[in-house]
Image (cartoon, rainbow, N blue to C red; front, side, top):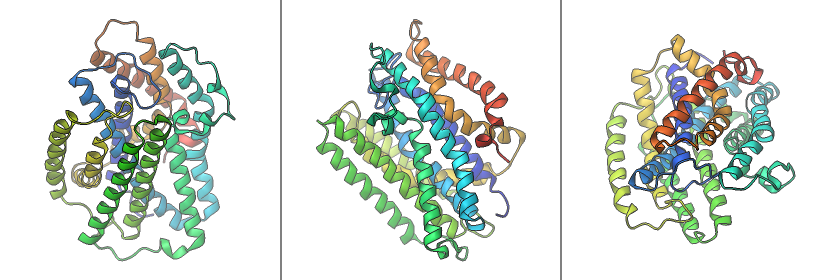
Amino acid sequence: MGKRIYYLDNLRTCLVFAGICFAALGNFRPFPLLHPYVPAPMHSIEGLAVDFLYNLAIVFIVPAIFFISAYFGASSLRIHMIRPYFKSKWTRLGLPWLAGTVLLAPELLYIAGLSCGSHGDGPAFSLIHPPFWSAYFQSPFFFIGLLLLFHLALMGAKKWRRSLFQRAAAAPPSAGILAGFYALQLVVAAAFFGLMLAAHRTPDLWFPLYVLYLAATCGLYFCFGVYAFRHRWFTAGGYVPSSVHIVGAALLLGVVVASSYITAGISVFISGTLFPLLLFFSILQLPLLLALLAAFAKWGDRETDKTKLAAGLAYPLYVVSDTLIQNTAYFLQPLSLGAPLKCILTLALSFLYGYMLCKYALRHLPCFKTR
């Protein structure tokens, strides 16, 4: 597979940790989208800022991780047979998804029921009830299952046509390729935005549409990661985004943030979420990804003991993070503390418990071992 690309590993690690932090921040949103664990919601402009950051993080972080996973996955599948590749992905993704969905997700749903004043009775622990197969029930394990599904599709692509994994000569992407992908991504976002606007009075419909939008975006970036692999991005002599993308993304981010605050005053809150901002978030996805790739290639292309430790802890910590965060947040509810302080305390305790659990237990399991 050649030389390890350290800055891609480091970027993926940082994205996972950022996702965990924003998941904790989601407890304090004024309009929680998934399980309503609301220990201390913020309803002021501060709460709207939290809602903005949380949605931006979900819409950007998850597809970026899928992009990197596809790049490494295609690189590995090119030199491995399908059977051992499937075994490795089932061990790495399938087992944590299955264990998390069956063992951890029901308890999260129960805590959600307690937070809402119910006792968690009913279908929460039923494995044959439809919510078991839904993103609502499986969160945060839904994305692990979705990533496994995409890797299965990648195996099917190799079985169907092996030539798809033949690498082309290293060359930078044309402006047409980047513009075409960017336009396709915006078209998908606009289509789902329109559907969600039409279904804003039907919560049973808009939430599946939101999940489908995330899945479609993750699928686009997964395919984009395979494209990057085929064209030898990030290899010696291959394409690496330049520092220009950092400046461009920073300027675009400023424009989007300013526009978002302007439109927030006239937008309609649809079923508890500011859905009009999804269109703004989609504008940032590709520029932010290219900017982060450029930044990490410039300043984060090295491996140290700390980066190795962080990389080894990131994935197992993600698997147990929601359980740690939601239980900690629930038991901190009685404390008379402000929402920001509760969020910091929740994160600090969750990271402390998670570090001990991952370092001394989970990292020794086959699904969490790293090279």
